[in-house]
Image 1: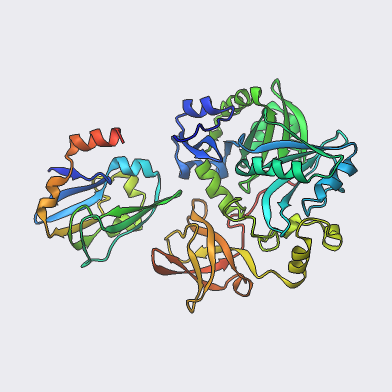
Image 2: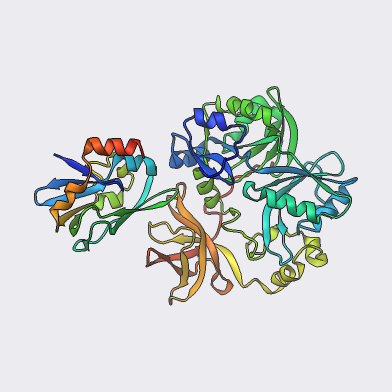
Amino acid sequence: MTVMYTKDHEWVRADGELYVIGISAHAAEQLGDVVFVELPDVGKTFSKGDDMAVVESVKAASDVYAPISGEVVEVNAAVVDEPAKINEDAMGAAWFVKIRPSNKAEIDEMMDEAAYKDFAENS
Amino acid sequence: MAQTLKTTPLHELHISLGAKMVEFAGYDMPVQYPLGVMKEHLHTREKAGLFDVSHMGQAVIVADTHEAAAKALETLVPGEIQKLGIGRQRLTVLLNDSGGILDDLMVSRSDTDGRLNIVVNGACKEDDYAYLNARLPAGAKLERFDNRGLLALQGPMASEVLAKHAPAAAEIKFMRFAEMQIGDITAVVTRGGYTGEDGFEISTWADDTQKLAKLLLEDDRVEPIGLGARDSLRLEAGMCLYGHDLNPEISPVEGNIAFTIGKRRRTEGGFPGAARILRELADGPARLRVGILPAGRAPAREGAEIQSTDGTVIGVVTSGGFGPSVGGPVAMGYVSTEHAATGTDIQLIVRGKALPARIADMPFIPHRYFRG
């Protein structure tokens, strides 16, 4: 399944009509040990680029931006209970939210795996 | 990079150990090593961590006699320096004329009469030295020791590790120091540190600092520790970070470090800002540095507003984050004194939300100093 990435190190993957969103393994590694995650409530709507979630390491807090516009239909309570999952499986079990997109075309503006890898290595 | 950063004698070693480097106090310093902040922190509390603190300022106040050097320094700090014993170290503060803190510093008395060693914060050292040069009375002068490096070895196994190379180190008590050979390196070893754990600060000529660091790191119980874990360790230990928890507006009474003010000096005064400080000692300060335990899991960082439960602003967080040994968020900050009692319910404004918290005793993790 194709995963697309933003320049802010979020990833988006299609799951039926929904999009699953998380932060990249590269971002998790840069953050270090994640100790706290704040996710939005189900039903909240975002425009692309809005502050959507917060991840905190021992050192600092970082904002996670909505990579795509839409409504939150599910949040991953497991990652809130155990933020360290983000360091273990950022691309899988540590997904953040599922969004019902309001503008699917936005995903076309993102980077694919190869482009993101190149971007992450050079930024 | 806009300006060239200074480097410590361990710079090459940090790079070779895979450290992530950041600017701190004008130096290129390791914020973490591959182990990561969390594991570095826990390792220090469990075994021993080695910290490069060579960015700190080492200097000596020199006069003809101890009395002359001590009296000279006492014109700028509220500590009891005249009665400081040979081989002993004490924390005090450099004050401005308003009684505000310009820096916190360690003062120790050498066995050479008329020499007081000082260690000041890296970020403050140039200003401190300029202030001392301008304000020390005639007969006393400042000598910088820019050619010395400083390591801290901290943790419950620090003493065993160091004693392997220098058996005398194990005998030094908290806040005392001695000169000794560590292997073939001549060092001044002080018992104490900035983590709340037993440990040492070890001053050597800069040419020897890297060699000493490598020698100590050969021990499997020792890991190199970066500034990230240094900050979380000192926060759990309830210790101030200058420029955050202390600044030129804050007095030592407000800063809850009135132990830096000597008993005799509380009646005699004779230090900058004495009128304010003696008044605050008698009547209580308007605000006080306190420990804060957030009730939930969200860390409250520096700058977070502190409110009473009715929503009145009563202060601000000056240091905050996640305490790996506490296993949750911890913070410190200033609140108006009527809200400073341990157990007082407060709220912290984090990203626009009021999070419940309470005033708590510090340290958050008990100190484990070696008092002999």
